[in-house]
Image (cartoon, rainbow over all chains, first blue to last red; front, side, top):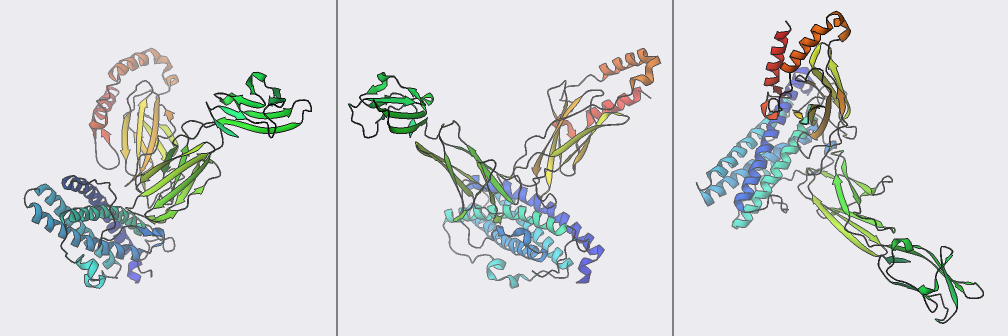
Length: 200
Length: 331
């Protein structure tokens, strides 16, 4: 893992983190706009409390400041892979229900899905940089890799679920930016960014 | 003994019979017999001024038969509660007050619930009407529910606040704001400041800033939003005019803007008049003509809408053209 701490790797890491922070910021802004549009379209209150949605990775974390770099990257990657599946499912449901009737919302959903995919790839790059390699999606278990198993859901339940997905994604976008800033910090011992070779 | 403002109060002289001869005093002063019904003291429609020590003495022996301290007050109105995180991500604090005084002692009880979990709000020694909570989780979508109950001898009241983790984040204003003229630059002012000391980790949770400035002679502010750094150079100041400058801060991603910092004053650099004493009149004439040329434009020329530029600094093009023309005049 010596390569992970080399000056060029440190610079690359910092650059990837900086780009990731910008991606996360843009993603959050788009998700927040989508959340408002989605809630309005579905006749829901965007600020209403929604119970935890099955299969949606919660952004909430205890002892966030104590997490290692590896933990941060792995948790982020698992989350965005899950969101990728969840958003794909939402998009499919949207097309089935509304078809072309609400193309704008469909396009916004697709755009966010693209950003989530891009961000997941970005995280994989960061993990690869540290010679850790990104875990295969099959290693993360069925629930996260494939999303929740498709079940017949009532329309209202689908709408609430969609609200929960987008709201949690918006939280993740904020958390990801913070995580990447932590990653980009120079390590006090080596003077470079914290090594991702640290064991959790 | 606590009684409401406006209540009618009847005091019995201990175990004395109704027809016993007694003397009542308040704070050592005899009370007129017109307030007595037999040995009972009747106070109608009490007001705050009637608070005091009431004593009843047996007629001839002056033995003290009864004593009470009457406190006239009101039950509490709905308290005003505010919660804020100025030290994110460490935690947040809640503070409260009553909209009107009750004039009698009150006790406050606060409960903080996050989902199903009850959190401890540790009361501050000073000020007394404040407590703080440490975040156990970050990035949670579950709302916090804070309930404050105020109780006194005459009643109770409460209020509830529900909010998201992000919504209450509001840093303290930036500190140590300094504005200095730039030598040989009559239209520049260098402004610098520091992150509020209460913000624990500006590296991981960077702040962005909003700077506003105006000459004292004008009412309209100019604004500049800065996404990084803790300094900025104003380049479109009016020559020779004293400016007032303030800065506000906000977390880069969440929450609301801080209050404005303490205002600082500065005047851009001007040439020393004594260097031009022999040509003072010419200089003054020239200055007068440039002053008229430099007459303060309306803020439409240089307001936010006319700001152009990307990144951290916005540039006012119209002011830039004026500066260029001004420079040409003195070549």
